[in-house]
Length: 622
Image 1 (tube, rainbow, N blue to C red):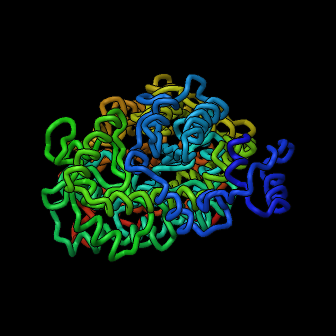
Image 2: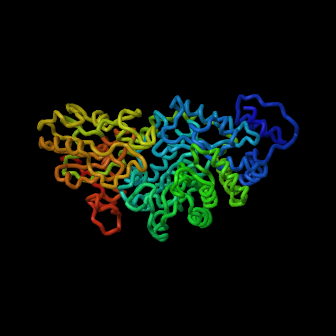
């Protein structure tokens, strides 16, 4: 604690004592040393630019290059990170402390912070995580619907509140940087990241960039629990040919600007502190080497003053070979990337960048610009004053309020696509049969980026499955019977609910070049239920619209439930009519996989058009 005080002393002892007392109530003050004024960069009342410039003058080239590097926690202990002067640490998907709890996280992040603060200049580190639908790496966090569901909800204020709740849960465990939101505009549902997109129109991402304000607050660092947000992936990741992840976006610059740039403009307007560059290429050149798009368009034309970060190991791909070379380091630094996510190769990157500066191929002005941007965000966040986890926020971690908010998001995201009168379900005296692989599976309904990068099936997180929700809603005289395969159903049931769809995936492992219909198990379940003549409700739990044109005639009601996350009861709220569906498609629902890409305004006729979504008629029932 004493080290935190040392830098705060000024020539105005009364104010210092007051300040220190506010910041460190109950901590004894170290005796006053000499009257030497503390450095400007340690003065919380100085302007951000004055603090940045003062600190920059005191930094060696080693200090500056270190600030530009982000390593994975699994590759550098706190002591090693401090020795390399690293500017940032991250946890990739599934990279967690031994105790995957808020306290375990806070202890881990604080250890990195303490080591960073013990270096001569005491520059705090910034710790990054992919909290893309809640603080999804941490057990017990509130898991919100993935973006495709939030896009269908069409409620930017709700999305802002989700950002705020996520920021609180993240900040309470130590990290100060969230690699979110994904502002991609998914133009081809074969893409494995379709669920990370708010929709196929730029408008969906523009409106829901409200999440940035939720994460950061109106001003970065002004509010307790503010975390640095990241607009990603710049630019065109949702527009690759055939929806290939990390593929080639082969469109004109005019089309790139019209479809993929607007969300980034809006993010900058909202003060987003960081932008992550895309793995994908534009017109055959990897985005990580695109100086025109990063420096000229993003930084100069759009006036982005925050920091630009690379994606995970992404500079390695510039030349198409494994690992990175001097040329790739030079190209990406000169393109305008400020911080480098080189999870396992920090020492090599540091060596290579030193070589490039020594050779004069990377100018000191570029190194200084990168540092100004990185340090600027650290100062705005208040990291120099409050480097450690705010554990007081842990009382809201996975709290009822946050789970209620998630349940509301689930309700609003349900899209009713077909209904011949079977919905809403009766609460009383109803006999309901529930089947399907996604009816009672927390992992499946949460999707990828849940505890691990790819996610997984099974009871992986606490929460409510869709089946739990249906059971809790069924009232007096009603029975709910569940069998995953649909075995045991007979004509005495009044309704059958089949919850089908996808199992978890993330990024390229979710690419579906040969189509995305229901799998054999889903088709068998639907056939078994339908054979009894019982009215059939089908819910799709998936990260994209699924091709089910052939099955549609057998289905009495169809609901797109997307990937609802931990609060499956929100689905049941809609099924039983406690919430009249309001969700509207933010993606065109293809009639066949061959129709892809199919988007609003392209003249193709999807099964269900963009913006489609039914409500229950007044009175609701049959």
